[in-house]
Image (cartoon, rainbow, N blue to C red):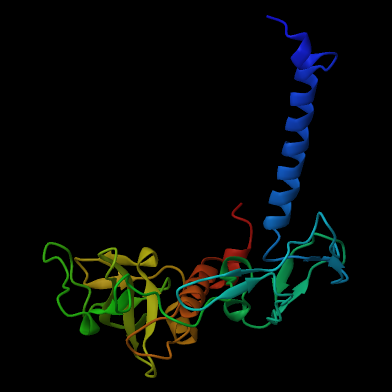
Length: 256
């Protein structure tokens, strides 16, 4: 029943709609401010000038995030100072960049990477999550699967780069993350991500189509022989990922 005392000449529906629109507009502003905590302000593609420069709609207030390995405040006005060994193909905005020097080490395209924490991923209770079998007592490979230990590792050109000296496992997910390759050229061993590996059981060979046999020596190495940091994981994946485009000059050309 219509209640004149409660509503009078007020259009309740209009008030509810207005409140909803104002709330929704405020929600959009809040979300747009929150998603600008990292990577903002943007930089002009040509001049490098920062845009937008801030304001109510374009800048989030600094907030401290309490994390297990130390508190982090975002935004913190830090800028990416990583030097890219690359040049622009055109002065127009949005034009692509191409590597200068060794494309596998340029850090662009499929070989790009982000700066990450220089500490290893940890298990919930204790110990590093990703470790070689030699440092993971109680873990072993399934005898039904091929054992890559000692297999020859070859590149996309079929040239041998070294042999598998160990297997790095994820102790939290129970899977192989990397193979460790002792290079024929000597020096520190390198890790190859397992998804980029083709185990050829009959030939006792492991093929890595991402790079050539001679290019394994350029791969990032680890500071510690028995653990890999977040930052090292990023760089290892970037190196071999970049090889799918930059390992040979023909790979950067059109397919047809």
